[in-house]
Length: 340
Image 1 (cartoon, one colour):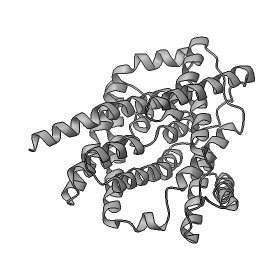
Image 2 (tube, rainbow, N blue to C red):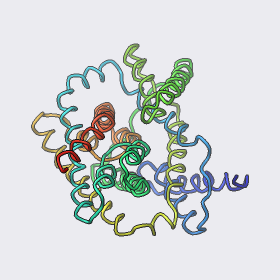
Image 3 (tube, rainbow, N blue to C red):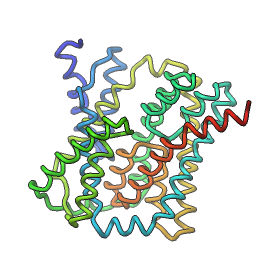
């Protein structure tokens, strides 16, 4: 058991990092700043300070609730009208994993490790699949952790500083009667989703509850000031606890190849989003962001900050998540069968 003071090192470091990042005007400051601060503290002290128990779940719960509130009835109609584009984009992001598989296989990485390390799915789900197919779970986990780190650090910065500045969006009204009920419903749905062993329950549960209510009753509500930042801080602190000196020293050649294929996949996603937006006449920036090989939370927060289509980005990411969950193992078995 960690000492009581250890439990406060991570959130305190994250709070300092988030505050400094907000003063510096960084994109998503409370997530990016807290993430970097926790990594720096863990690497400098070489101590595995603990994350707050349940911190990441709580952060996802708050952030996902805010994202779900974007799904008004008008927005949902737009998403449904764009469904063919969303499906094509989700399949396109799935194909980007071929880049990683090719790079890792050329380096001599075994087939199962290369496949599940390259899939754009959740880290825990891919590690579980890797264990079932005699892959190297530590390397699969390291690949997904590094990919998420790169996405959190690079994508918000590139989209924020690479695009013209936008004024802060008008804050949606706050109705605590609705919000308390929706937050509670999201938590219940997340626990049920987790009991069913489904992926990312604390993201998808609150997102579904708030999106359904917002679309059904056309709510046009938002989270109060500070609650979204609290969620970002909790997520950033939790993510930072995956990294220390040992992580960056483990298999540097493998991590360098993961870095290379993640950057190439980002570039390919940007090109695919641009082409798909041109062909379909849709918002190419939202498509580019939605096709990035990253986490739902981080990319949706970026879309919200830049006033892009949060619903479109969310739909692309959620559909991709389910495609990976349902197709990854059958595709791997088919690949193995063709090579035996």
